[in-house]
Image (tube, rainbow, N blue to C red; front, side):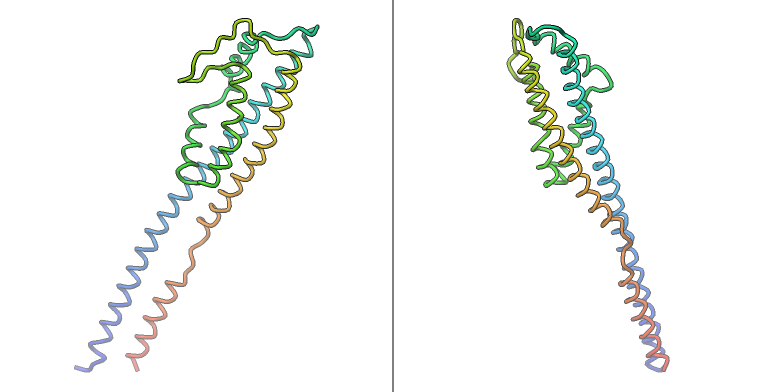
Length: 214
């Protein structure tokens, strides 16, 4: 039996095995990338919509306070209890924050997107704390705040609404940065995988077969 008669089938078998092995690995890698891309797309979409909702929420609070100061005659301060009731109306409406969704986004960024989580942490918690402090909202685990006889002057309200609008701009900047970073990574994940490995395998197979057919 000629040497080529033995080695040619072996070379063909080896080439086929390599191609199948690389194909399997490529399919597994492709599936992994699809899962990562889907999770990244969902995280980006939820973070974007959550931050937009937070911007609208803070803007709605500022506009509400401006309107009450404009349509309420005199210079008397506003009772915190009254202001707190106004905030409750917003919270109980569709304009209220989706705290569960906010927690999901924060958790997702913290565990998977460290840089974007830092951006989130720079603006979101401080805005919430500022709102809670102004309206004397008691958060879980904190001591109950007594708002009886407490009030906010018009100057304090004007300062608060101006501060909200500055924070809104900061959040919008960070929102765009967060979404842009994830969008870039999403595009990298979803780009077509190069066919170099397939080209290499089939070229090797072709050369081996051509050699032993001589």
